[in-house]
Image 1: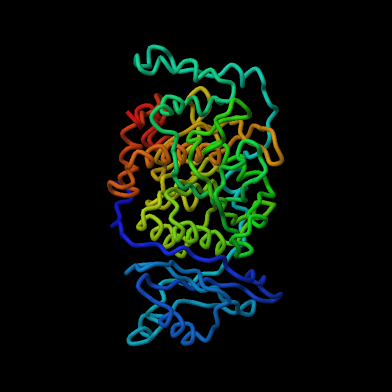
Image 2 (image 1 turned 60 degrees about the vertical axis):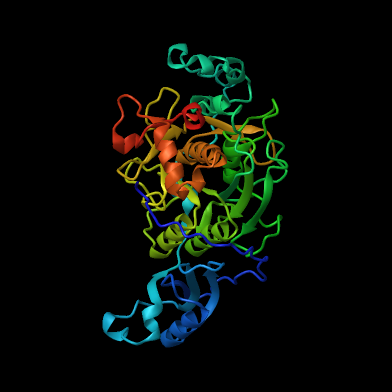
Length: 428
């Protein structure tokens, strides 16, 4: 399996809400991320920072009684001053040996990088009503009884294409905790009202609902694809009874600090999220972000991320082997021209003209691997609700997703990975 990691079983301790927001870096300063080795505790961090001659503005750290965790300090230095990892000759017997990596914090337009085609397209009522149904010849006798369910107007072509309704008599993802690491979630959206059980703003460092309210729309659209109500109104998600948590790491313009994205991953892990949706990405290979992803996977959280929309190489975090990485297809099972590709791609899912919830109410159609990713997140939630995360953690879930996937004709492995996942096969 691509992300075989030792699953560490530990009791997670729920963290209280954080206090004051991390102040913005002062003018004329550069913010840095100092990441420590997994076994380093607070005293070791303090000693290493003292040896570097810097002071932490804040610390992002794992919680619980684990032998292996994650911790990073955010520090400010005058602009032009470089902070580098000490050379090997400096490490012998020194607290500096506790440092795993040092890198500049960066502010990135994560949505622009991961979703270049994230633009509203005209709503096509005829296409929405005339959904693409599975061919009768490709359906078993058991699946044919779901014909009426597939015809419900709230079921979009993408949710229908992965055959989500065929799983709902068995499971709708009941109780599975899904972190949407994004721009927040619109807590007043009718399709999502009551679906959000909590959240966190990595920007303000609080668990105040007002702070993780969506102010962009991207996170709300993604959330609807995962778990919108099944109520004959608006749209319905792939796993309509999964429980959503809004982890806001990006601002209204879709930009966010690398350190805030890392903070969101660690918050989700510390709070026992079972799957995290990351419909974002950038061409930044960050050692700190990779260590955060490795910690999350090791603690049992399935991380699903967008391949990206450059049409070229897969971005990060999707390029990391511990991540379930998703490319985008259209309604004719062709790879979307914008979809990034390469050996890091694990699956393909509908990502063109995907109707989902709009910030402020109603629905809107968007395209991007950002839309394909929550399709697979919802499918992962269906698998987790069946107990597969308890049989090997993320590897157990991945094995079930692979078992239920079928390669699409005419596409390469770099374009589609294992292929399209079928929800019916996933739960039967």
